[in-house]
Amino acid sequence: MNGKRFIAAGLVIFVVTQVMGYVIDNFILKSMYDSLKGLWRPDMMSKIWVMYIMGLLFSLMFTYVFIKGREGKGIQEGVRYGIIIWLFVIVPMYHSMWVVFPIPYMLILKWTLYGLLTALIGGILAAVIYKPSAPAKA
Image 1 (cartoon, rainbow, N blue to C red):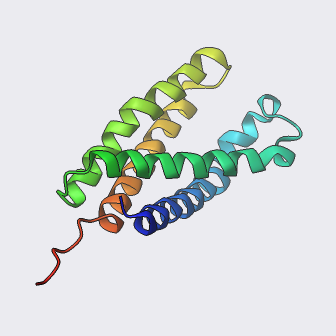
Image 2 (image 1 turned 90 degrees about the vertical axis):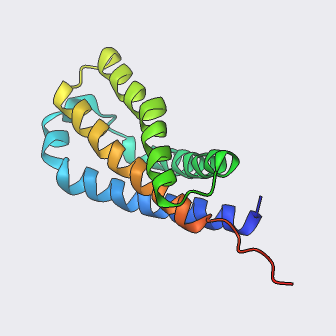
C-alpha cells in the first residue's frame, strides 16, 4: 500500500464529502430539517466536532477497504465500490434510523439517495487517486 496516496485519497474524499454534506444539509434539505426542529438536539452544534471525526474515520476506512480490494479497473471499479458501500452501509443505516426515530420516510429516502451520490463520488475519487502505479522503466 502506498501510504501517501492512501492519505491523499482519504483526505480528498473527506473534504469532498463534507462539502457535499454541507450543501445537502444546509440548502437542499434545510426546509425539511426546519419542519422537524423538535427532533434535533438543541445543543447539536456544540457536538458537531464528533461528526467531523466520524466523517474522517469513515473516509479513511472507505479508502482503506477500496485499496485492499482494488483490482485496478479504473473508474468503473470506483462506481461499483460506491454502490457496494451504499448497499452495505448507507441503505441499512438510514432505514434502521427510520425504525427507531420518528423521522418521515421521505427524509430517509432523500438521505439514502444523496448517500448514493456521495458513495459514488467517493468511489470514483478513490479509483482516480489510488490508480495503479505505472510499471518501473528499466
